[in-house]
Amino acid sequence: MKKPGVISKDGLNRLIQILIGMGYQVIGPTVRDEAIIYGNILSIEDLPAGWTDEQEGGTYRLKKRSDGALFGYTLGPHSWKQFLHPPERRLWQAQKDSSGFDIVPEKPDNIKYAFLGVRSCELHAIAIQDKVFMQSPHTDLHYQSLRQNALFLAVNCGQAGNTCFCVSMQTGPKVETGHDLVLTEILDTESHSFLVSAGSAAGENILKAVKAKPAEDGEIKRADEIVAITTSQMGRKMETDNIKELLYENIEHFAWDKIAERCLSCANCTMVCPTCFCSTVEDVTDITGDHAERWQKWDSCFTMDFSSIHGGAVRNSTKSRYRQWMTHKLASWQDQFDTSGCVGCGRCITWCPVGIDLTREVSVIRESPLSQTGNSSKSEEQ
Image (cartoon, rainbow, N blue to C red):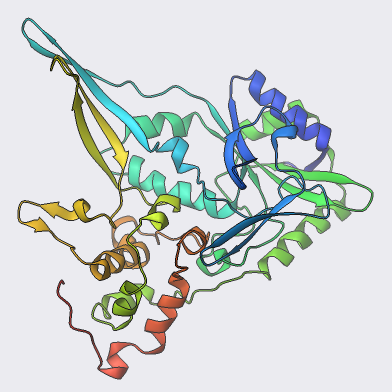
């Protein structure tokens, strides 16, 4: 791709207007309900100017910055999967007629999304969900339609949060792939600008329309320095060498009992996770019985009913459900999709009400594996 360009705040606003004029629904960060969430963006006035977030295990709060940064936060509770893999979606509806029921499948949405402010870890998460929904024998046509119509306007992280560990997962903080445009926000005492470069042909065309000025060497160097500083700020780290084998060999580790003493099985971790994809289906009818619908809804491996079969729940303890989640996320996901299911965004740590930290739980097992201690817990489920 061509050499990066530089745009001002007005240029960023012009970019948003160009996208809207092209028929895109621009979705980006905005402040609502004391959190930075993803919502409709009509101009830069909707962006979280001067806001950042403080995060720790079980803790999230907004805080004013000393500058007017538009992307000076880390990550909020929302992930982009809510748009590509919605929490609720009708699959089909059926209407009774003289010959029986006429079933009408729901047509894929034809929405054109332009996602603004996507971070590198989130792009990796979307790539993982692509494998789940589009690179299997059973393609999700709804996801495929939304995904193929979407534009990704990424942002290199200007700071890391206390629960971030993308460096450990090799998913950030620098945007390398999966984007149409990538911006790096540069704030100096006298200027507020964005280094911007294209990652696709579509991005090149949009960049031409924005009319960015060519970037100078000093501006490119400054952007690289920002990413390097962010890399050094990671609040967490996870040792991933042989992690699949480590977890497989420690199914009966005492750590699972300790986690179960704290875990509420609330499913917060799976709801905020950008890669979790579990769902269930519900059939509903009207009071006459003449109209029926089938809906797909997000579900979680932490709910009792999720593993329920004819003989009862397969995993009926909190211990077994947390073990299933973490082992699937970090180990068996690799067998299924040839990648880890974790991108190091840290949301599961921040939004766990009791602050359970999977990076810490992995280290506990690594520090005292059963192969060394010979110590195990008695498990009621395998």
